Each structure stands twice: as structure tokens, then as C-alpha cells.
Image (tube, rainbow, N blue to C red; front, side, top):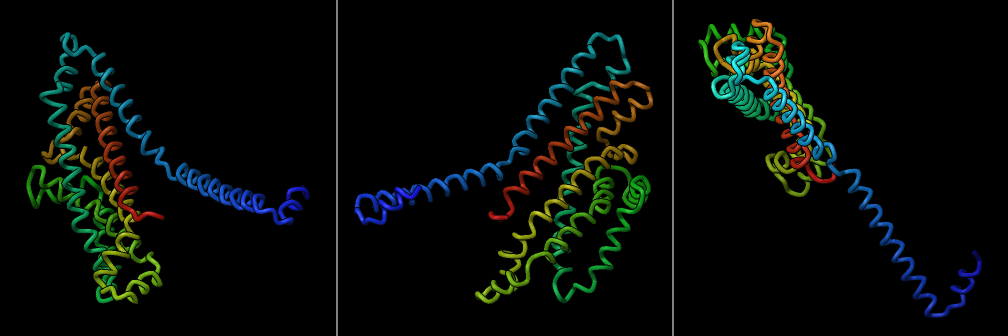
Length: 285
């Protein structure tokens, strides 16, 4: 152990150069190893495996559906309830439409409201607004649909606005929590560099609050997909029609196919939300 050090101290130029190069190589190797370790830790393994799991579930449901032999005419009730072109596909489109537009409207209302309620001038109104949003989610879903049915009549619009009120709280609350969680010194540093309040909000506060906000959006999205199965109660369509038919006719295959399609839609939307959460948040978080 003492040998190489003694040789180095003797001052031979080639040995000093070798030692210097060796130190640089060690540092480079350490940096590469650290980068590889960080890359491994940050690798979105879950995001990569989730679509595979969704495709496996969809393939399993498809083979189960084909295994029912609906074309044989042996079971008219199942064939009628599970007709893809007449029943399942239109209901799937309605389910996605309800979930998509109700979530978009929730984001358009809740995020600006959350931003406004975290500003000094409106901060005192935050608890009152959260109480109203909390009341919307505290109401039973069926009761909320009936209230909007009385006000707006039957149809998709009634369901969408009922779900907007029902899912408003997670996005509003997460927006306020995310913005309040941003470090004040970070904001003050931006202001000290000459940023206006608007620039500090756009370039510092909102990017740092994105993970918390998108977590609320994902929660609202899953709530809306699940609640959309009740849309048939007020004439809004959706896969709830198939699920309800399976319950009434006591046909487990009908019930299983309808519930399986709802699960696939929910998992797909949640995966898209996870992708957005990963790639929209600032690097380094």
C-alpha cells in the first residue's frame, strides 16, 4: 500500500501524470456511475408497464367476449345486451365523453379559482369556497344527479355538470395546497431578479405546484369515470346501461363485460394522467 505512494512522492513526471489521469478517470467513472444510478431510479418502469397491463386486460376481456359465442343465437339476452355496434361501442363513447368533458370543465374552473384564492386579496374567501365545493362532494351522487335533472332535464349535459360539481373539490384543494407549498424564499428570489407577480406565478409557483395539481386532476378524472356509470339514470347513456342490464337480467357475462370496459377506460385515463404528471413537472423534482 505504501509502495505506490512512495513512488509518487519521488516526483517522476510520468508517474505524476499517470496518477493525475487515474484520478480523472476515477472521477469520470464515479460521475457515470452516479448518472446511471439516477437514471435507474428515475426510470418510469411503472409508466412503461402500465400500458402492457392495460393491453393484457383488454385482450383477456376480448377473448372472454368472443368465447361467449353471441353469434350462435343460443342466448338472445346476452346477444342483445352485448351487441358491440349497437350497444357497447356507443355506450363506451358516451362514457368517455362524459368523463373527458366533465374533467376538462373541472380543470378550467378549479385551477384558476385555486390560483385566485391563494392571492393575498382573495385568500380570506378560501375556506368559504372550499366549504361549498366540499358540500358538492358530500351530497350522494344519485341525489346530485336528480337535482341537476330537475334543473337541466335529461341528457349528457345534465350528467356532465353534475359531475363537475361532484369532482371540483380535489382539483381546487390540490391547486391551493400546491401553490401554498411553494417555498417563499424561492418566490422572493424570483421577485428579487425583477419578476412581476404574474411572472413569478407562471414561471415559479405553477411549475413547482404541477405534481400536486395533476394528482388532484387524476383523482377527479377517476371519480368522473366511475360516476359516469350512473348517467343512464338521467338519460345520459354510458356503460351503466349494460351493467344495469346484467343486474336486471341476472346475466353475469353482461355485467362482467360492462364493468371490464369501465375498468379499462379508468386505467387508461389514469395512465395518461401519470404520463402528464411525469413530463409536465419541472426537472429536478
